[in-house]
Length: 500
Ligand SMILES: Cc1cc2nc3c(=O)[nH]c(=O)nc-3n(C[C@H](O)[C@H](O)[C@H](O)COP(=O)(O)O)c2cc1C
Ligand code: SF4
Ligand code: SF4
Image 1 (tube, protein in one colour):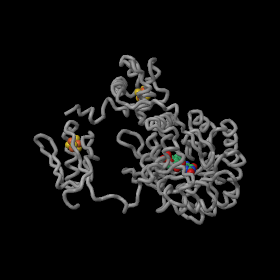
Image 2 (cartoon, rainbow, N blue to C red):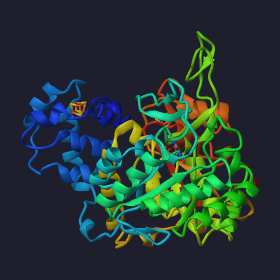
Image 3 (spheres, rainbow, N blue to C red):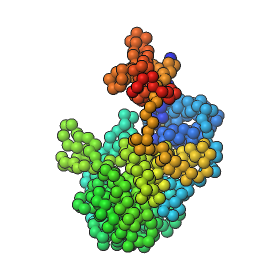
Image 4 (cartoon, protein in one colour):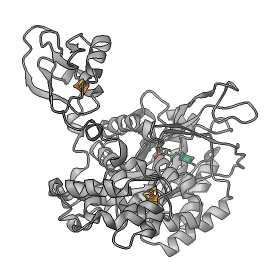
């Protein structure tokens, strides 16, 4: 049996022990390499990029001072030595300079597919300007309206992963607290100083007159695209936000009003709080929209304080249902994106995808399933604009390693493989294959198969070994999902010995 600590990929060599400091003390203390940047690349799934940043002649003595300076006690030397050991087996980053990430949003050129999504992260000139300088291709500005906003305090809550990162994030925030004129000034200045960046003006009206007027004013201020917010679930004013997105007639009517107010491209941002997102999305296209943005946040209650018995976030002993975003919503967002991209009425229109994108891998998944551009909020709120570094670099490395020259070559590539329920082959079976070298004898596979499967695994308490009984196994692969060491893989697909 190999070293269980290594097999569990936990403990001192885990880059998750790094808390991703701002102005990192470790890097300040090291004059031979940039440990904080390498650890951040590892953390955001850009292992090849991290290896590239590590000098070939790295020696553990270089990072002794960095370790001393680290407030979190991260074993930087061990992590970087491990990376150095793995480096020869990695695919490398050759060819990334030849990869073109440029694409377009309804004909508006984007230098890469990444936009800040409409929210607090894109709510002032300074914030957007800083993000643009760091590499974001554009921003969907925080939703502009003619309403006066009254925001609650506190207004966020989160569900954490065991290691501390946010798994999901709830907000009860509404729209921009700045006046229309203040927002127009921001858009004007951003467009003036960053002409190559894409400004998407998100708007919300209470009636057709307001929708039309807001579209007209944003266009005059220089916005490249209008995004209709038909999807905020947190509105105090009834008949706005996701109330509209759940009513295809209202979506059609208000999109038509926006169309009357502008000639620039119009995106309709849809709510996921609906059974079939394609119905209001198609109504938006009927009303004159050029594309669809999805998803806005999912109505949620993240939890309840067991002492006060009030849900989070609590304001004077009360809470409300709010919008859920971040990692947890990605599977739901991907499903909505795939539904939109598969719908005959919608598939030829631009789809701007969002909901839970944190790393370049998430981004690729959205592109493969139908998104033509990508938007992000929650990961920026948690980690800062700097995530753009590994989003761009990781995406470039992925494409270069597969000999793609342009990001557009992978758009929608997974879509043909997502089929209807009655189209899936259900006659053959894939048994689990156990790697005894990797097994640490925990018995988790036995437990799950016994209590949540088909009692196809036995466990010997003396030797702490497991045995598969093929005649009982249905090939569900539950065991491989619970195994913590990667000891269970899929074997070859075969015809079952008996009828399932
Ligand atoms: C704090 C917060 C404020 C938001 N405000 C807006 C908004 O003003 N307009 C809008 O269209 N979407 C708003 N959203 C939704 C996001 O733009 C995005 O659709 C959603 O959060 C999913 O993406 P994410 O998982 O990357 O955050 C907000 C989200 C958060 C977390
Ligand atoms: S100082 Fe420590 S915790 Fe902070 S970035 Fe460096 S390694 Fe991570
Ligand atoms: S889950 Fe099963 S195969 Fe995996 S380590 Fe535990 S006992 Fe071994």
